[in-house]
Length: 307
Ligand SMILES: NC(=O)c1ccc[n+]([C@@H]2O[C@H](COP(=O)([O-])OP(=O)(O)OC[C@H]3O[C@@H](n4cnc5c(N)ncnc54)[C@H](OP(=O)(O)O)[C@@H]3O)[C@@H](O)[C@H]2O)c1
View 1 (tube, rainbow, N blue to C red):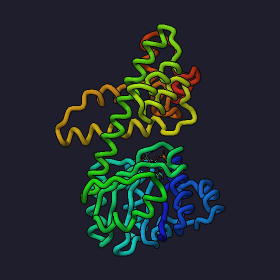
View 2 (view 1 turned 135 degrees about the vertical axis):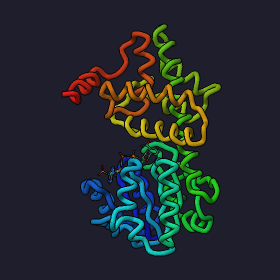
View 3 (view 1 turned 90 degrees about the horizontal axis):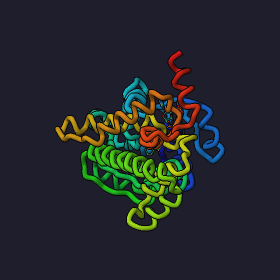
View 4 (view 1 turned 45 degrees about the horizontal axis):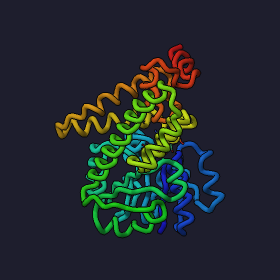
């Protein structure tokens, strides 16, 4: 297919590379030009403007947050203004339910088709075409885009015809992952303070009752205390926590655990954790128990940002 990829961050660059590997004709756009070069070397065309990435059968957006997506989609010469009738916008970013609904309405008015296709998996999974993709939107558009999903992911799951349903699935999934991070942080603070080996502890968990990718990935990161470079940066994780709370408020569903994690994120960011992986908030349980936890320079950064 002829496809545009807008957003070449930690996730989008791997996804674009796999579209090329899958034999698709890919045009890439990124706000920061330097990230385009590696993909052009691999055969992608460079779009100087958003509109130039919207000339094909489909365009994928993989941008940081609601603000970035709003700008790229609704600006003059943005996605809505540039995509031809019948073409498909696939939004892979983790964004709000409300923005997904707004885009679905705007694309319908423009005679274009809109899919929400947020993804599960970190940058390593994106680079290895191992993402899990939750997609929702018009079935004929989903069918047409299966070759794109197959190039980027290991499995695609359909969640009906309303695009926002996939966004809610993604936000609830990240809520679950953040709950695992909090629970692991607390359990590992406990065994760590007692002097147990945290790697051995995670090996035990993930070889027995907790044999799941989420415990392996985050148990490993917490045991290694490896939060830099961030695969999924703390401000983006905080964004997802706020978005799930907003979706829950609209539906009147209390999420007490998400509220607790909201404050964990605030503490992490207040202490200068912007450049750390989102899983670094796991260390706050260790700090509460009097154990040194966050990298020592984190506090210095918080101090610098106040100057
Ligand atoms: N990382 C993960 O583990 C992971 C997993 C699943 C889903 N996600 C979701 O996937 C999306 C992308 O995540 P990521 O980790 O790839 O983020 P990232 O590395 O921070 O990349 C963000 C991308 O958005 C662009 N961008 C940000 N603000 C912009 C603006 N105002 N206008 C235009 N472009 C803008 C950035 O352009 P520049 O290069 O110019 O900054 C970059 O291309 C997010 O919604 C995230 O929640 C991430």
